[in-house]
Image (cartoon, rainbow, N blue to C red; front, side, top):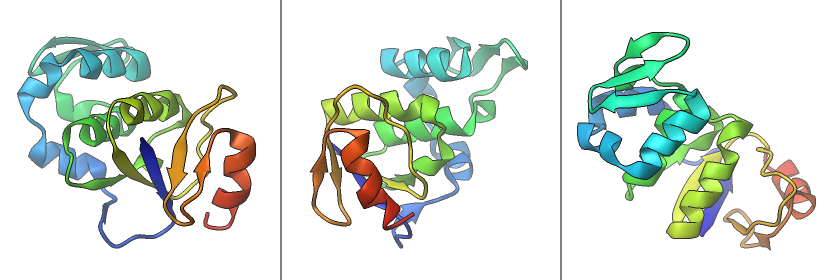
Length: 145
């Protein structure tokens, strides 16, 4: 399940780009879900463990991916850390839900992310509530961000 903590929290990694730079493992780029995230969010294709073809930047290293996709990869691959998902845009919300559907994952949000119109399941750690729609999420999140 996707679990969200809204607002400040001491144990969160806020600078996900720096954390990614020094901690990502090249083999992560062989993972099907990681390749799909990169394709969907950055519209780029993984050429190998050290090269990604970006339509905007040309061939880039993994450290040059967008902050949003780097954060998604960290959330998916690093199980013992909590990452600031506010480094992600709304185009990453569906991926957060997909990751949370496969495993328990906790993220920090410092803004109200739009999770869309379809039903979902998110536990709000600030209150213990489980929400299923933006209509349920907005009033709770509004107290903290």
